[in-house]
Image 1 (cartoon, protein in one colour):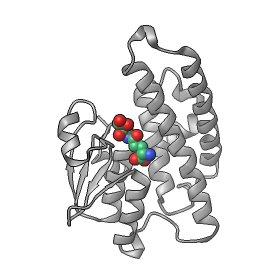
Image 2 (image 1 turned 90 degrees about the vertical axis):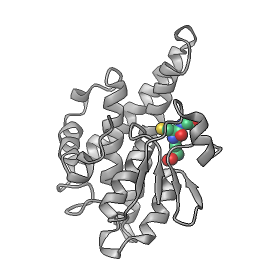
Image 3 (image 1 turned 90 degrees about the horizontal axis):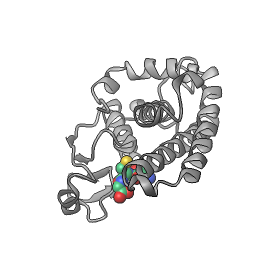
Length: 204
Ligand SMILES: N[C@@H](CCC(=O)N[C@@H](CS)C(=O)NCC(=O)O)C(=O)O
């Protein structure tokens, strides 16, 4: 299996960390959707990161769909998605918030990096900032209940994705979302980022 994409993408990073936690061997190919556009197109003409090339050559994309596929390959005891009930619903709810935080951060980064500075549209950035604050305020409340992980004693996909989202936002747009506004999330994220699967998968 090959995972294609850079670790500064939160979607690539959540898949890479999950592969390690699930105990599934893979090769990581750090191909950039911007700097290596033509090389990326040869693997996936849609140029979306992450792209997963399966052992039989089938190409998957979209981190959530890739993770859905990978979960089924992993031994039951290592899976990151609770299979049913309230804990599954709560995991899905937190994932929705974390992925929206990733999406809005990507939009802010693209607004700043992909447009000429004179074409930056400040009202759009202001709107993104409001949406990001709403997402992280909800996650700050969820962290209050973490014991020590979001669903209790065992790490789930909610923990992976919330931690990855926070690190990504802090790396690129801490000026919009300063860490001292979300102190519990900052401290909790440091704990997640110190796990071996996270330190072996650095964003930068
Ligand atoms: N919903 C997708 C989002 C993936 C995504 O937008 N990835 C970015 C990199 S962070 C990308 O491929 N950007 C290139 C483009 O959209 O043209 C997922 O979860 O994988």
